[in-house]
Image 1 (cartoon, helix red, strand yellow):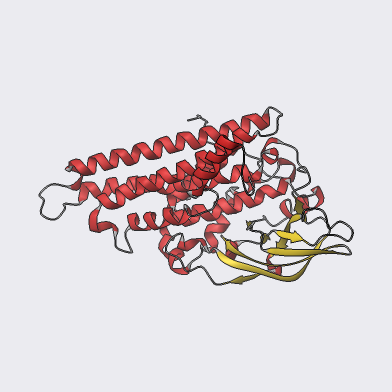
Image 2: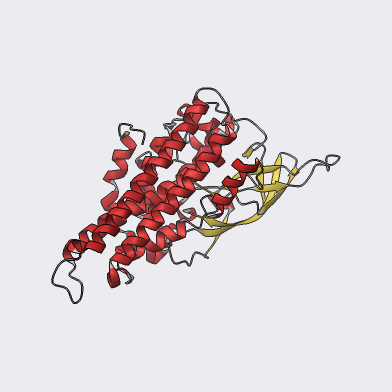
Length: 384
């Protein structure tokens, strides 16, 4: 695994662990992160890691972004998931036209954007901008966000009906959106991933990202295709959840004496084997996903566009890492016996969280088929 000195933001994320863990049960019950945790993300410059230096951000290395997402997920899966969405949504700061990038991300109030890129919005052009209507699910962290990023399929312009529909990613201020209370789930309960909706909202000229245009800020972080950087970020959440599951099992195993036994669980051979297998799964998963992410970064940093093969490996490595982490947590959950089945059990929450996270389309099991087909046939259906 690539070795990098911890960045200041990683140390700041570690310092937030007690605060995040202290309110994890509150967040799960409320189905959203408390406002003070979101403020801590902003005040600790964690969201600013994805913002260009010219707008007052940190413009961090991709591996530093992953490390911070993993660390916050180690504190709590829902908190890590929300930060992941804030950071990946903030990457649009370097893709927006400069006047809007600066206006939103260099203003007096720190921008905390939540994004959903499902193509369930529609838009049409009007004088001075566009009008958008849409409803998007999985708006993780939207209750604490002050900006929301959506995706809109535009109506073809007159006389250009033969072209593929253009997709724009508009930015909406919080007051323009409606949050619909829909997040009732088994895992990542505290992420507040509700539906969000806009109805005939006017977006002024340029306050959107066009996927047909090059990034306004042409540095490495913004030239890496966002669709290729996103899967490693999702996998980083699974890594953090699996790490904390290992620690919770280790603590439990030294204290628990199973029924019909006189020795702690830690002395049982099957528990030792399962723990070691889980540890190896997590450590190897981390090495893989960090390796493919570094390769993606280095290729773009050298001045070349990201190749299909490098992007394919980033997607495959992310899916495999997430699946390996889920397998590790499964081993620990089972080895813990009935201790893991109660709602207050940390292992039970980690199990629910990681299986919810791993349903994300960017790392779901179908990735194996898609990435295998791409290498074997050169054919891939859908966005990549």
